Length: 462
Ligand code: NAD
Image 1 (spheres, rainbow, N blue to C red):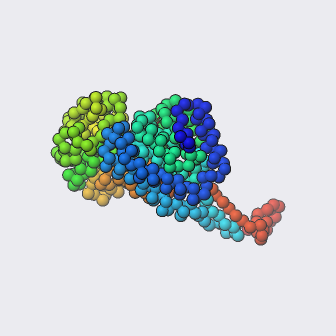
Image 2 (cartoon, rainbow, N blue to C red):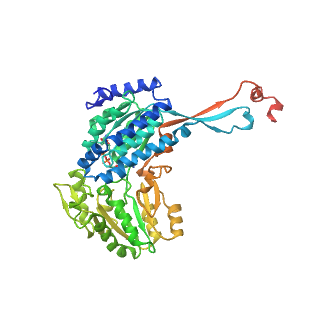
Image 3 (spheres, rainbow, N blue to C red):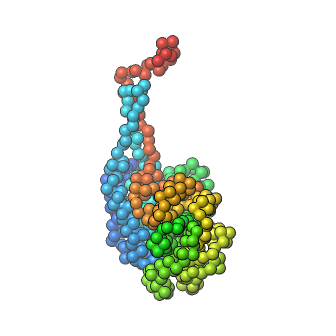
C-alpha cells in the first residue's frame, strides 16, 4: 500500500514514522487552510463511503447494532466534521485585543498556530469516534498526527488502518496498530501534544512519558458518573432515559450513568420503572435481539459478573461467558461500600443506592472522585442550582444522560480523576493549537522613550 505507514514493529519503526511526520510538518504542508479542509472532507468520505464496512467491524468487536454505530460513532463524527468545516475560517481568524494606553500606538492579536505532530491514543469502546473525533481537531488545527487505535477492538483498528490511507494525506497522518509494546515505543518519541482516551492507570503512564519531553497532553479518562433522581421528577421518563444512557453499547460508555443515587422514596418507586424500561427497549430476552451489545473481553466479562451479587436483582442478571453476554441488570439495596461501588463499572450493571435527601446526595458525590459527568432528574429549580454550585464534574446534565456530547459548543472533558483538557468543536482547535500572543508596535512615533532610562525626576511623575 502506498501512503500512510501501518507499522506493527515497535522501536525503530515508531521513531522513523514520527521523524517522517516532523519533517513533513516542517515543510509547512499542513498549514494552509485549504489542506486542512481537504483532510476533513477526506475523513467525511471515509465515514460515508465505508459505513457498511465500519459498521461490520463494530459488530465484530462489540456486537454493536448498525443503528447505534451510526448515531454514536459514524454520524456523530460526521456532525463534528460538518460543524468544523462550517466554522473553521472564523475559528482560525486572528483575534484582536486591546493594548494599554501607555503602549499606544500598537496592535495586539491572538494567533492560533499548529503545534506540530500529535499522538492520538484511543480506546476500544467507541473505537471509531474516539480515534477520529480528536483527529478532526488535530487536522483542522493544522497538525500532523499519529493515530493509535485500540488493540481490543481489532476489526475496527484494522479497518481504520486500511481506510485512513485511502482518504488522508499520507505524508501527514500515520496509523500505528498494536498494544502495549507499540504504544510504549510511540511514547518514547517526542510529540508536540498527546491526546489519550482511556483509563487512569494508563493515563498516568502516558503522563509520565509526556513529562520526559515536556509534551502537553489531554487525558480523557472515566470514573463513576452518578444519576441523581429526586422525588417529584417524572420517574417513568427518568427511568427510560437512564436505561437508554446506561445500556447503550452494553454499558461500555465513559459518560454512561454508573449508578443511580435515589433520593428518599424514589429508591423503591424507581424499581418497576427501570425494569419496564429495560423490557420496552430490549425485550424479555435481550440476548435474542439485534440491538444489544456484548462485553469486549472475557476479562471484563468476569470482572462484571462478580458485581452481580452486590445487590438484589430488579431486572436482568443472566449471563453467558461464551458469547460475553450480560443482560441489562439493575441492582437494588446496594451498599455504598460494595465492590460494585468501588470502581467504574463500565458494563451493563446499574446499582441503585438510596440516600435520604439532596444534602446526602451532594455529600455522596463530593466525598468521591470528581466524575466525568453528573446527571440529575429533578423538578426543583433550587435542586438544580444546588447541584450546579455545590458539585464538580466534567459535565452536568439535567434530564438526559450522554447527550451533552452532541452539543458542539460544549467542551467535552473531565476534571480531577476524570482527566483534564477538553475537545469538540472550537475546543478541539484550542487543544491542538498554540495561541500565540502577537504585539505590533510601529517604530514611529517613539513614545516609548518616556520609559527609557535615565529615570529623571519628571519621568517618575508620569
Ligand atoms: P484500552 O484498553 O483500549 O486502552 C486505551 C489505549 O491505551 C489503547 O490504545 C491501548 O493500546 C493503550 N494502552 C493500554 N495499556 C497501555 C500501556 N501499558 N502503555 C501504553 N498504552 C497502553 O481502553 P480502556 O483504558 O479500557 O478504556 C476504558 C476506559 O476509558 C474507561 O475508564 C472509560 O471511562 C475511559 N474512557 C474515557 C472516555 C472519555 O472520552 N473521557 C471515552 C472512552 C473511554
